[in-house]
Structures are given as structure tokens and as C-alpha cells.
Image (cartoon, rainbow, N blue to C red):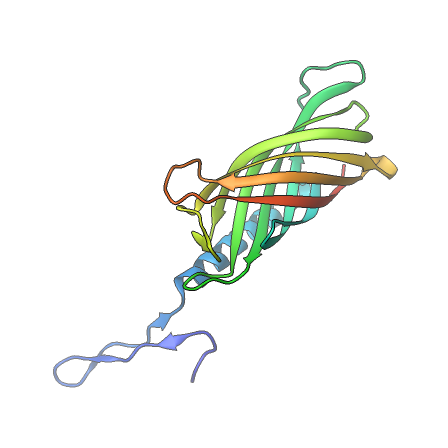
Length: 206
């Protein structure tokens, strides 16, 4: 019986004609890596769903690439630099994204990315209204190539600056713009990096 997506290896025979190696399932390493990473993220989210403070959907582009991202957030209770009606707060942002770029020879045209970022936000004490934010985090890619881009390593730093506005009942809705840069900070060459203009819609549960 053939199983879709699985290639069966030829059995190996010992002297005397007995089978020493039965069926070996061989799957593409990249697909396994992607599936494991996505599964790990889903398990993490399921296990801690009660503690999640928010979730977000995001889309972005550069001149030849597009991306889509889903993320969850955990707000910090700590407030710094408390001013007159303003403070510096923040949250943890755990995300998974899919990138696509114009195809190029001997290179995939898409990849998956997972990231964890501490984000600092200058915002009103009541949280409603405009804010500024920035963050720098760690990201893992399923490939070091994307179209004509070469990233050097699967580990990447991702930093962003952005602004947005919180509104609605309980200030639950959050719409923002971000400019994000990802690269490996010359840890390993080539280090083409990539930049995205992003629009993000976020919903805060509490």
C-alpha cells in the first residue's frame, strides 16, 4: 500500500534471503522541520491559552516579497517612566509567519518563520488612543534561501518600529503599522536581510 507523501525504501536482504531492513519512511527534511515547528507552536498556544492576553493578524510586503503572520501576546504588568498620563509598558509576542518571494533558480519561493519578541510600548495610562512601540527578538527560518535572497543562517534577529491606535469597548481593538528588518547581524554570510512594511490588527482579551 502506498501512503501519500511517503517513499518506501527497497528492503535489504541478508545471506539466506531474510529481510534485515523492512520499510523505511523517508520524508523531506524541510517538511519535517516545518511541521514540527508549527506543531510545537500550536501545542504551546493550546497549553497556555488561558494565560494569553491577546492575538494578532498581520500582513506585510517589500518590493518582491509578501508575508502573513499570526501571533499571541502576554502583557507585562510592569510600568516604567510613569509620566503625566503616559508610561512605558510592553508585552511578549510569539508569532508564526509564512513568507513568499518571486521564484529564482535552485531556491524555494516560500518559507516559514517563528519568532519571539519583547515589545516596548509608549502608551496612555488608560491604554486607549495612540502609541509608539519597538522591539527586537529572535526568529528561526525553515530555509536560508528565499528567491534571490540569501540569509546565511536560519537564526535571524528581527527588530521593528511602529505606531498604532487602541479603540473600542475595553480598548480591545488595536490597529498599527510596523516597519520590520530581519537579518543575522553578520553572524554568518551572506546576510542579505529583508525589510517588511506591515499592517497589524490585534485583539486584546483583557
